[in-house]
Image (cartoon, rainbow, N blue to C red; front, side, top):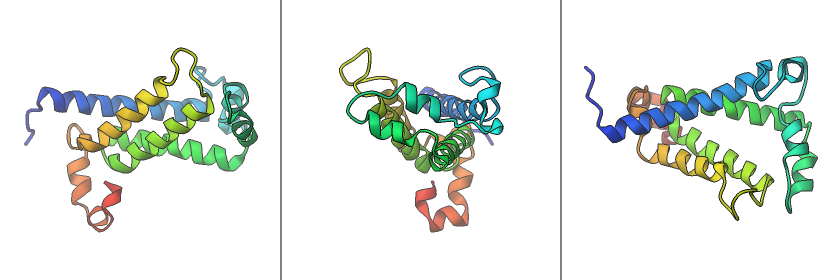
Length: 165
């Protein structure tokens, strides 16, 4: 029933699951204020903006004013939070890895642009690395290993709309 995974399949599967946990944790912490990056009083469930702190304090560079102008927007908050949740769940389960990977890449590139130039290197920071990882996860079909990707790709909706892979 279970195929033995090669070393590379195992590594890609663990990378996918780890990325999923990072995104899902960010969603939960910002939603509930679990005390890691977000204090309880600043939680989304208490009416606070999950993007306000970052967009007002961490943005810099030529697009600083643009990103600061987005701070506190309910639409931006909802897009960001649903992105964290969707990417996290998709990566964790191994379903929708293609759309989650490219969505995560876009999210990471937007965060990189919002804080450009990086502090410790002329152009590369962790956001660029995550963006590359997200694309890598989509190209190797990482959802097939330790995930539901094979089953997901066999469903009629994915056969009809392959971009949902």
